[in-house]
Length: 178
Ligand code: 5GP
Image (cartoon, rainbow, N blue to C red; front, side, top):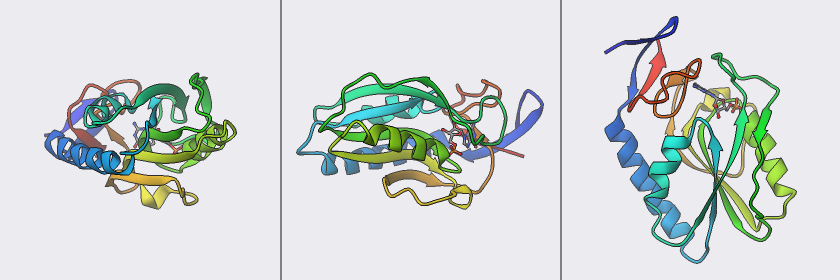
């Protein structure tokens, strides 16, 4: 069923059921990969808040959770080259295994910016887990991107944390712009 948010129409793309299944599978991968470590999960707000919450519940071993807030779309439907750094990561990540949790990777500019910034704080390792990836939009490869929920076309999506003009974050499914 189509929905309208502000001036745009959207249609269903990924159901809540599929998101739940994929999140469980990624959680199992993370449990296996970090069984000998106490990883720090770094959630990138705002878009990933639901994914962070659901993914973290799948983690069985000890772990820590911290947040940072970056913005590259601020309200529109295209990525901006300039990243807005709204809230810095406060936790000390020196010698820690860091897993960045993102909602979506589009051009990759936001992640390159964040990875470069966190590397300067000397963690033992950095990996990235993103619910969505738009391979056709990615400007340069991101070696650290090890966990991806779904690869999608180069289209604008909302729902499950992702917004259009700050709306639509509460939707249980993911929708694409018609
Ligand atoms: P990048 O820097 O990779 O171009 O963009 C990443 C950020 O842009 C994401 O964290 C997200 O906030 C926003 N973004 C990218 N694609 C979409 C999209 O299709 N829908 C929404 N709502 N935000 C997006």
